[in-house]
Structure formats: structure tokens, C-alpha cells
Length: 198
Image (cartoon, rainbow, N blue to C red; front, top):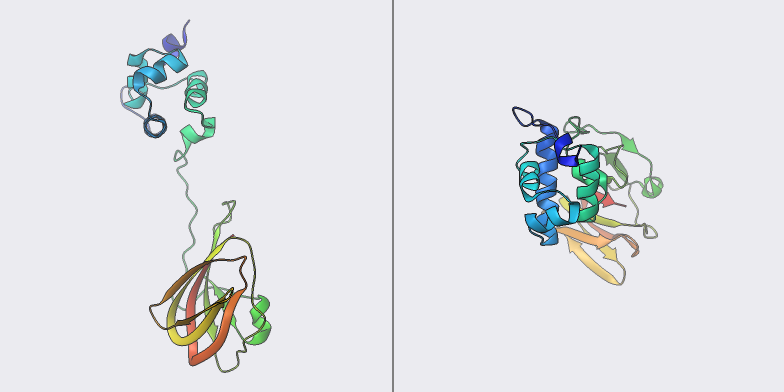
């Protein structure tokens, strides 16, 4: 029995067929190859590639593997988006757990706004509050990038050798490896959203 003879033909496309169809089309398009060329690379007919891309047939695992090899992507890439359960964290206004960080002992409050546990490199959103009890202190350094968005107050924020005066509505995106942090607290209280991606 050939690979194509082993393929099934569902009466209506299922979610997995639709996911595979979308991913095959996407990666083929990104690679700049035609359906005919993909067929040649996999040993499938052009008609079979068309059926796969229109989700009108179910692929065998062998066919999925051949498609992945021909598209130079991991097999799992063709199943991306097939999971029905997606993780999410919802935090009501004024809630979120207070976390202890380097700045805590200097009077800075960090309120975690949630994180996704199943992600390898999750983002870490926090609401940072600085009050009259807050001090400036030696600057932070960490891997990844960070985004801050000012909500209230005014401060001078340092990154490397640069200084930025931030007021409500201002934002700053920077590399975390550069020394960074509040340098001067101009108008209290100060609240800003900080999102770190490490």
C-alpha cells in the first residue's frame, strides 16, 4: 500500500486536519516553494498535497514526517495550534500577588499581574509602585528585554549611560543586560507597568 493509499478522507475536515493544512501552506509559502515542488520533495502527488492543504484528507504520521522534512521544520511545527486548552491568567484590578524582588527592601512594591507556567520563556508583567518610602538604589541587570509604561507620577529612569524623564503615557523598551532602574523620583506616587521577557 502506498502512502497515498493509506490516507483517509473524512466527510468533513476535523480540527487537526485544518491545523496541518494551515501549517503546511504557511511553511511552504514562507519557503517560497510551489505545491508541485513540495510534492516532488515528499514523493506525494500534487493532488495529494492539494488535498492536505485544503484539509480534505487526513495525513498518516509518515506523511506528516515527510512534509516536515521537505519543509525543513520539526514535525511538531505542523501540529502547532492543535491544542484545545490554552493557558491564561486573569487578574482583577487592584489584585495580583505582591512579589519580593531586589527593590523591595528599598520600598518598591511589585505586584505580579500573572504569568504562563507552561511557556519556556514567559513574560513577567508587574505593576510597580514607588512612594515616599522608596529609595533609588544600584541598578538592575538581567537577561532578555523589558518594557515599562508610566501610569502615574514622574521619574528619571536610567538605562546604561542614558537617562529618560518619564511621565504618564510614556514608555520605554530596553535590553535588560544594560544597568537600569529609577534614578530620581520627581513626582510621587509613581506607578508603572513593567513587562520583562527573559
